[in-house]
Every structure is written in structure tokens, then in C-alpha cells.
Amino acid sequence: MSEQTNKKLGDVLWSMANQLRGAMNADDFRDYMLSLIFLRYLSDNYENAARIELGNEYPAPEKDDSRIPLSLWYDENPEDTSEFEAQMRRKVHYVIRPEHLWSNIAEMARTQSGEALLTLQASFKYIEDESFDSAFSGLFSEINLNSDKLGRTYAERNALITRVITRIAEELAQFTMDRDILGDAYEYLIGKFAANGGQKAGEFYTPQQISTILSAIVTLDSQDPTTGKKKHLESVLDFACGSGSLLLNVRNRIEAQSIGKIYGQEKNITTYNLARMNMLLHGVKDTEFEIFHGDSLANDWDMLRETNPAKKPQFDAVVANPPFSYRWEPTEALGNDPRFANFGIAPKSAADFAFLLHGFHYLKQEGTMAIILPHGVLFRGGVEERIRAKLLRDNHIDTVIGLPSNLFFSTGIPVCILVLKKCKKFNDVLFINAAQGFEKSKNQNRLLPEHIEKIVDAYQFRREIDRYSRRVSMDEIVKNDYNLNISRYISTAESEEEIDLTQVNATLLEIEAKIAESTVRHNAFLAELNLSPLP
Image: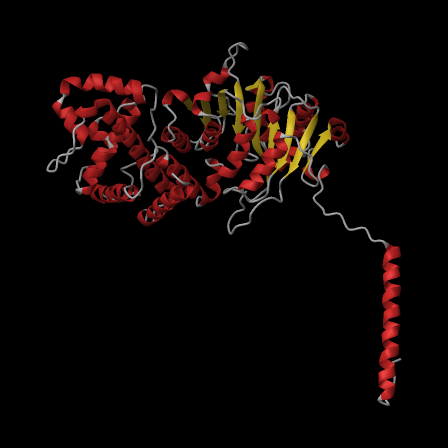
């Protein structure tokens, strides 16, 4: 399906969302809307697989029977359902009983059944508790179908949900259902809700343009990026994964069969659930990803707390867009934490380096890490300067990329991308000043494909481009007291054209001679007319 068609579907769904939510806050309605689209995706995927599995046994809809085909088959073959469900778990990794499928709920909504809301509640609970072999508990924990935001009475809430379900069914019927269409529409809607979510948007969404840059960088060979993409990535970590779009971008860069498992961590419960849905919606099986709900700075994920160095998890690629200058409360005990012990603890006023060191600790020796941070990490003093100096002395900072301002929904400040490696080929730092390369739009600046390509190309081939990118020796960085402020190393000012004073003087003399000659001729004409000459 073309990008234009994807955008059209996204626009249709977004317009519908605005019409249906009424006075409800966009953030609240987002969760209901996206959960319904998720149920639609899981159900369609499941019914298509069931149709293939059952073959000629799959019933055709009957004109005077409101039951969906899979319900008919279950009713006619009760002794075979257990084996069928076991086979579906092997093939698609989950099961949805007929009464919980979207098509059944949509039919109830279409016929104005008063039970659509209750059935939807049961469906969400069933998917959380029974659909998947792996734990998907709490997947819909933030979806309160009894909320007064949907209506004061059950009848009002049922009426609104029925209306939303019916509209989604009608609008999606206009489009040919390619495999990825709902995943693309879901991602598009996440972006639209983020764009209209103000300061909260930065908590769960990294703009696709920036995701593309990070994913392109970490999927290139770490030692020699000029050789192109890695053939295989065993594991990828995003420890502040939000809706999971950055992880999905990395996965899309590497063919699905060439990537092992993707790991994410997210502190916000609503966003954590959003990320898990987003993975499944994009065809990532539950065995191919793991998202953990918890605090990365507190390091409360048991998997990452392994004390045996031989068993410590390490990742081929680490990507992150953590909260900028996040205030935290570091404890004295963190001084002995292996993540920070060799570097120091970031100040409580800004956890930027704490996030960086957390991710860097779990990076493989031959891996690549790319993290988005505010520019302050490049030049702030105190303990941050000491951490920065240690990273530089150990030759871990590979590239510093300055991006334009106003790219994010949640802040207008310019940000940078730091690329780090544990085993680095070059004993210098590549600086890329991409702050001027963007398209200005009404509410937000945008990076166009050519801007992204120029950044990635400069990184990949370590190009030096006048007023854009430069390789800076460690000696020069040391002379600048480990300050990485990009303007210290790359000037974007246009050099003034050199003026040749001798040539300017000759030109002025020539002009004066011409003026004198013209004055003589002009005075001759005035004399013929008996008029006074010019002085």
C-alpha cells in the first residue's frame, strides 16, 4: 500500500476521532480509539489464519444468521475446538474465541445491541488473561469502559462505544486490507495524537524523522560503517521506549529474519501498554519482543540486574530518546552501581548522563548506541564535565550530531544525537552540524529525506564538509577542556568576500574619468542652447 493511501486512512481515522470524542480530552480518547484498532487487527489476523487452517471447513456466512463464520464452526464442531486452538497457538501464537472477535462485536454494534459494551469488556479481559501464552496481563488496564468520560449511564457509554466501533468498521471497509495497513494507520494516529498532546507528547513518541536517523546509524557496521548495514542484529534495547516506534524503526531497517529480539522498557503504564500493542500491530510476535514496565534509572528490571558478568545481558544496538533534563533523586548507594561507578552520578537536576550511562553499560563491545539528548550535555560543567571527559578519554564518544530546533512535540529546544561505541576505530570525534537543514512548517520544523540522507551519509563515510561536518582530534578537544559545544568546532558563518582595494581604486578612477567626459559633452550641449554649464 502506498504512503499516500496510508496517510489517507490515517487522516480518515483522525477526522473520525475528532468527531466522536466530543468534549473528551484527546489523550483519553486516544487510548480507547487505539485499543479498538488493536482489537480489530488481532481479530482480522486471527480470522485470516483460521480461514487458512480450516480450509474448506471454514463456514460461509449465512444470510439469516447473525453469527460470524468462526462461531458457526465452533457450534458445529465442539469436540474439535481444543485441537484447533492448540494449532492456532503454534501458528499465530494466540487464540481469540469467536465471541471476543472484532467481527462479532462490530455486528453487535451494527444491530444496536445493548450488550456491545459488556462484550467488549469481556474481550479485553480475555485477551489479557488467556489469548497469549506469554504474560500480557494489564494490557488494557488503563481502558476504563465504565468511566463517566464515556457517559454517565451504561446506556450512554454503550451508545458512544457502539458509535465508535461502527464508524471504525465503516471507514476501514473503504480500504484494501494489506498486511501492514492497520499497523501503519496505528503509527500515524499515535503521531497525530502526539502532535495534539502538548507537553505530554514527548513522553511516548519520537518523530519518525529522528527515529530514522538513529535506526540508520545503529544498524550500520560499528567498526566500519562504510561497509553498510549489519547482516544480523541479535538484540536491540530502548530503555525509554515510549510507544515503541523507535524499536520498530530499527527492526524495519534489518529484515525480520535477520534480527533476534527487541527489548524495551517504559515507566509510564499507559505508554507501556501502547508499546506492547504497537509491537503486535506491526506483526512482531510475542516471542520476538519483550517490553518491561519499570524505571530504567532505578534499574528495576531483573533481567538487567544480573550480577554474573558472564550472564549480564548486552545488546548489539542501544537507542533511546529519554526525558530531557529529567529531575531525579540519586542515592548514595548508586555510587557503587556498576553503571555509574567508573564515571560518576549525574546531578539530580538533570539525569541525562544517568540515562546515557545506563544504556552504555549494556552495549556490546562491538555494538553502537545512539541517544537523543539536550545540548547541555555537551558543555555543562561539574560532574557532567567529569563524566564527559572520562567518556572522551576512553574513546567512547564517536559522533556528535546537532539537530534543528522545534522538531519535537513536547519542546522547541534544539537537541543532539550522541553516538557511542565501546570499541572505536578512530581516535577523533566526528561533529555534524545539521541545525540549518530542515523545512519550516506552521507548528513544527521537519527533516526532509534529503536532510536525513545527508546526516547519515556524513556519519557513515565520516565526511568532512565545509560548515557542516568535521573530524576533530582529541588534542583539540582536550585544549577545549572536553567541551563538545558544536559551534566550537564548526562555524556556520559565511566567510566575507575578500576586497581588492587596488582594484576598487582603479574602478573608482575609471568612473570619475567617465563622469568628467560626460560633463564636458553635456556642457557643450548647454552652450549651444545659451544655458549655464554644469559646475
